[in-house]
Length: 507
Ligand code: N01
Image 1 (cartoon, rainbow, N blue to C red):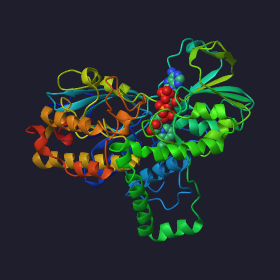
Image 2 (cartoon, rainbow, N blue to C red; image 1 turned 135 degrees about the vertical axis):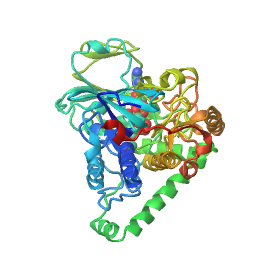
Image 3 (tube, protein in one colour; image 1 turned 90 degrees about the vertical axis):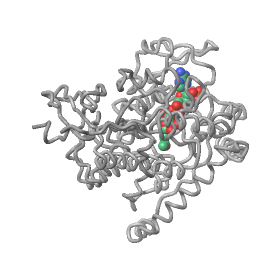
Image 4 (cartoon, rainbow, N blue to C red; image 1 turned 90 degrees about the horizontal axis):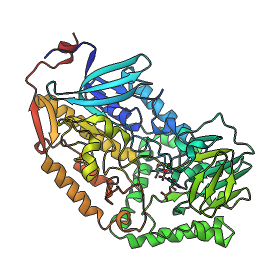
C-alpha cells in the first residue's frame, strides 16, 4: 500500500470535542492508543456546553452524576450546574489530560468514506487553512445527538425583518431589554430561558404547541463544608454520586414497564402548576393530556411563575405564518414582535451527519436508515460501516439519568475494540447483519410497553415509522454490562496483512 500524497494517516479520528469525544481521547490515550486526532468544528472543547449559552442554560441532571467518573469535581456550586461551570469543567479535564495537542479546532468534517482497498476511512475536513484529508483506521463519531438546530418550517419565517435566533445559537449582541419577544417552543431549553427573558423584556409571547410535564426542582447550593469534604474525602463524593444514580435508576420501571406509575409524577406536575399559576384558564392550557414521561419530564420552579407574569402571554393557537414583524396564529391574531427566539429543538432521528458518512457498499447512513430507521449494534457500531463507532448512537439516549454514564460505557467498548484489533492484527471489524438485527429486534420488543411508546404523545424520541430509535429502554447498568467487553464473535473481520502502520505510510 502506498500513501496518497496529502493524506494524513492516523489510527483513530474522533469527531467532536464534547463529553463524548473528550472521553474517547482520554481513554484511548490511557490505553496507549495515542495516534489519534480530534476534529472539532468549534473553537474549544465542551460541545453542547460550549455552544448552548442561552440565558438560564443549566443541566437538569444532578451535577454529581453529570461529570466523568474518572474526574470527579468537588467544586460544583449547586445541585444542578450552570452551563459555564460545566464548560469550565470540560476545559479543565481536557487540559489536565495532556491530550489537547491532538485536538484540531475550528475544523468541520465534510464527509467520511470507507475505502475498502485501504481498509480505512477517508475523512475530508475543512478548517481555517482549507481542506485536509485523513486516512483513519477507525472513525469515532462523538458529534452529539442534539447538536444540529432544527428551525421550524413556518410560512414566511425567512421574511422576518427583526432578529431571529435558535436557542442553541444565542445572539448575545441583541439586547432584549424592553423588547417585544416571541419564543416558539416549550421544551427543556425554553423552560430555562423564558424565566430569564421574562425579567428583562417588555413583552413576551410564548408559543406552545404541546405542554410538557414540569415538576419542581430540588435546587440548592453546595456549602463550603460539603465542598471541602468532597475534596478531602473523594469516597464521600462517590457515595453521594452512587446515591443520586440509584435514585434515578429506581424510576426506570415506571418508564419502561409500568407507565401507570407515572400518575405520581403527574400529581407533582399538577401541584407545580397550581403553585406557579393563578389563572385557571392558563393552568388548563399548560396541563398535558398524555402520560408523564412520554416526552422528557422537565424540572423547574421558575417556568410557571414566568408564564403567569404580567408581561408574558402563552399562545396556544397554532402559528400559521410569520410576517416581516409579527407572528400570526390560526385565529387570525397578529402579534407584533422585535425579536424571534426559536427553541424548537434539534435533528435527532436523522442527524445531518448521517448524510455524509458513506459505508462499504457506497451508501450513506442516511440511505440505509431511510428504509427502516436508525439502527446500530449496541448503539455503537453499524453493519456495512466497518470501524465506525458512534458515541450516543441509536437507542442510547436517556429520559431519566446522565448521558455521561452512557458515554463512558460506549467509550470503554470502543477502547476494547481498538485493543482487540491491535491484539488480533485486524484491519477492520464490522458487526454482522444478524447481530445488529437481533439487537434491534430486542430493543423494539423491550420498547413496546414503555411510556415512550404507549404514553400518547408525539415526541422527538420517535422516528417517522413510529419507532423509538433514540432511547435506551432500561436500566443504564444493563447497558454498561452489554458493552463491558468487545464481543469480536459478533463481528466480521478483515485481517491486517499489510504494512498499514502510520510510520510506514506517512513517511
Ligand atoms: O427541544 P425540544 P429543546 N411550531 O425538541 C416546539 C436536551 N436539553 O431544545 O412538543 C411550534 O424538546 C415543540 O413542540 P412539540 C434534552 O434532552 C437538555 O427544548 O413538538 N412549536 C417543543 O415544545 C431535551 O429534550 C437540557 O409539539 C414547535 C419545542 O419546540 C433536548 O435537549 C436543557 C415547532 C422543542 O422542544 C431538546 O430540548 C435543554 C413548530 N414548527 C435541552 N417545532 C438539560 O438541562 C417544534 N416546536 C440537560
